[in-house]
Image 1 (cartoon, helix red, strand yellow):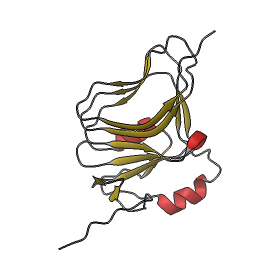
Image 2: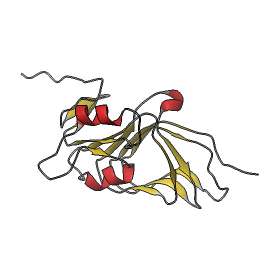
Image 3: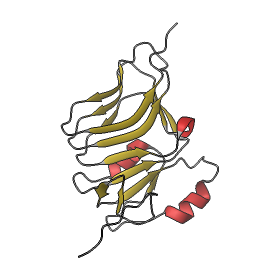
Image 4: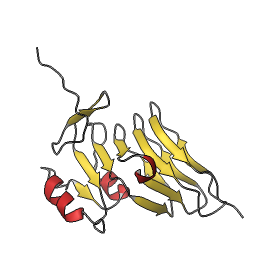
Length: 165
């Protein structure tokens, strides 16, 4: 009988098991090319998958476009990533996990810069973990996360709340 191993750090391979959850699809990374260590990161983690997709993207939106629903794809967003959203980040692919890396203030940060919800989860069985939401840049922002999908898992999310004058 085969033994199932839990991997505590994200590996370079195309499939993994982490935090007790099995991911059998592709692993995608989000790290801006402007990051100080991007070249080393790229050399260590770049993979060109058979479907033509790369393993590294500059934004979460680009990585989501590459991910395939319902096959266990996981997107790791590197520590220090920060983005001010001008429209909702919509997680609309079932079974895709989006996991922020890092601890404390080094976790990925998503700031709402518009009237609406910063993240909207419309697909079923999505996992969204380890993100921070700084104060929005507008009082018109309505929520950090809006969940409409079934079977969604959310964990280790922190937020400052709403901006204001």
